[in-house]
Image (tube, rainbow, N blue to C red; front, side, top):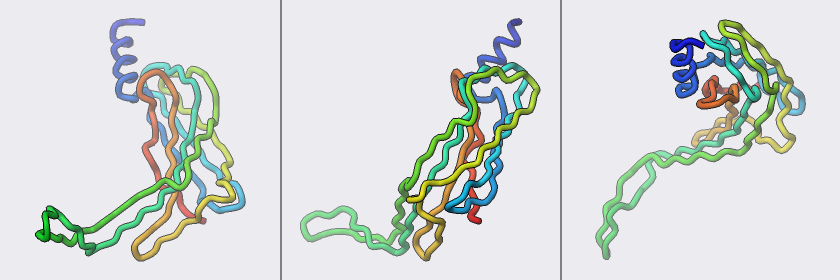
Length: 158
């Protein structure tokens, strides 16, 4: 391996830039599997991976506008400001392995597909006046250094 190839491999290890990873998903329907596809476009050097995996998270968010918030409370003297108060919680976290250790060749395109079913107890999608619940997914290639990934993508409801 030449010096230039070693430098490329080092850069890819640090930045996670060894491959571009994309995720495509059918709409999520509860009680039956939905298809999810992971696509990886390997850059200019081979990539040794330990596995291909997908993470799915359920997120509930609450935002309440015009909430009185007390600041600088001292004796009977205090300051009140009206602010937007927000909170977020993960309601579900799944990690699924789609494929195991292998070497992905430089400048090649790879695809993996899985049928995924959310657990029976999983909260459904909803959007209210002050709250919402949704699902996001991210696909990654597990390798030495920073894992190339698709970033978090929203999943759509069927």
